[in-house]
Amino acid sequence: MDPPQLLPAREQMAFTLGFHIILVPFGMAFTFFMLLANYRGLRHADAAALLLARRWSHVAAVLFAVGAVSGTVLSFELGLLWPRLMGTYGSAFGIPFAIEGLFFFLEAIFIAVYIYGWDRLSGWAHFWTGVPVVVAGIGGTLSVVAANAWMNQPGGFTMREGRVTGVQPLRVIFNGAFWYESLHMLLAGYMVAGFLTAAVYAGGRLRRRATPAAEPGDEPSRPGRTGQAERMARLGLLIPLTVAAILTPLQIVVGDIAAREVFHREPAKFAAIEGVPHTDTHVPEVLGGLYSDGRLRFGIPIPSGASLLSGYSPATRIRGLDEIPPEVRPSDREITVVHLAFDAMVGAGTFLLLLSAWYALAWWRRRDLPRTRWFARATVAGGVLSVVALEAGWVVTEVGRQPWTVVGHLLTRDAVTRAGNVWLFFIAILVLYAAVGATTVHVLRLLRHRWRERDAADVDVPYGPTHDESADASEPA
Image (cartoon, rainbow, N blue to C red):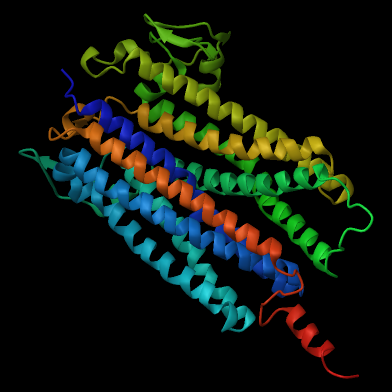
């Protein structure tokens, strides 16, 4: 019998991880876009790019603070909800998290230095203080992925009398699943940050087009304000969308490699992804459907598709769920969740690939963004779907491992706490996260309102070209 704490503990972990994972791309990739804007501003004497970089640094700081809160909650949950995991396997499982903590502090220090340095450092000196922020963001993310990959393919330790001994840190970190999971997550983070940021600016374009034209007699805007704002809006859409569009085809290839690695290294998870009830060849690829009574129902089968994609041959043999012992076999509901999540991830990725191709074609033909409403709407949809793909991918990774917490070593029902009413803990977490989420949105809206009210000519970047030009212009001829 499963302990009563199992369901609320899993639900709470899923909620907090689903919340936190949206913030991860901004700590890892959004700061890279910030540096690209900063570099362009310095390299091409572009005041709008410098102002955009400065504003993005404020957004990055806010999201970093929120990510620190949600990440800290996750750290406490690992110990409170899953004491057997940390108590037994902490000496191995905790190594990547210790490294992640170092990267976290490094990122916090340098993002503070970067923001503080806008008014106090020379241009290029200030730019280089932002590089450790990007490096630390990537390092912290890969450290967490290493821990997750270790849970899927544990190694680098030995067990004696129920205790972990002989830990090999490098083998723990660079386990069998690390390389394909880390690269897949790294690209996903940059894509989500890119498409989601581009979606914000594409939505702004749609709102501006929907705004009625100014009537005669209306007070005109200040000189230079409209051009500067339009320039920043264009860069705000162009920079992240370009990075995301370049990486999307690469992610499709990496995703295909990762799926094939799962086929070879994690056959139980792959069987759940494809909903394969019995070991067989010529296994169809089923789009959609619900797994019930030993088979996928209501889906659209593609003959031999799963076998062909797995081993480049219709005769490829795929292990079925029937080879998993009944006591550790995932439930029909879990199989359905994993299968549909995988389909959602692939479907969203296909949409993003088509959006990237549309953008690439327009840029190749006209060296400009498509100016149609439909492209702006598609970009907004792409931002939403990138998050869907990210969340669905983590569902595949986490639920696909069930009923194991550490595959082959620790069952989830054995890892969960036996103390207290976890539902009350879950409710408290929901209240906390609702408050954190509402505060985050409010702060970002305040920043946007302040920026709209500020004169666009007031770049306020000491080493920026506008600062120098305005100083020269103030001198008598």
